Length: 299
Image (tube, rainbow, N blue to C red):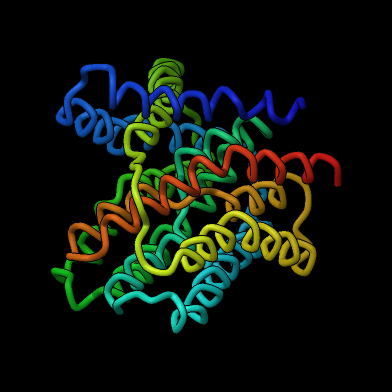
């Protein structure tokens, strides 16, 4: 019950965002602007601030990143092997495959912060920042024949990746944030979680997934149930414990990233199916992610 209460406010914000999108009278331009504000300003401020001030054990970063990468690869393989019976065109399958391993950073940061405070945010920021290039490369590579060849340009401009690198370099240099700058970043960071989760809710879509129903169920099960189990086994294998272990499992249990829908649409893919998977994993994560957090606490 305590775990449910711990995560309930964050998922309630997602539901409020969905309700406001449909009944609040806010137009599409408002939500597009809010998403850009969170993505380009507020969340980078949160990541930089957390990483710049956290006491990180960089000796644990290598195994953590390796385990995160292997857990994403497991999602890719588990869904790819099911391709023959999904009843999808190659393009539709490539569009949906990314939902098996891409992750919602907003929810990850929010949950890690609730469970482990600033250290949780910093550790999740490091892990997500390291995984962003691999997730984007894999997603684009599968549907590259419809792309525009801008992958490396987009990665070099990714604000979450840049903020992560900047925060790590600042930390490694042993620098300290001036008090006014720290206060400014804190105010931006405080706004990022609530507005980010509202934006996640506003992006939810209803409707049918299409294709073989079991195919969509399998992708959801892989993302929310199998990947966290794989991540936990990898943590034991690599000797990852404490906060890094918890962050790794939470990372693997995150719902699919909202940006997967944007990529699918931009590259002419199956936007409707991807939108359904994002919505399904996000809503179901209230229960599955709560369970994983509870299991971590009980372990």
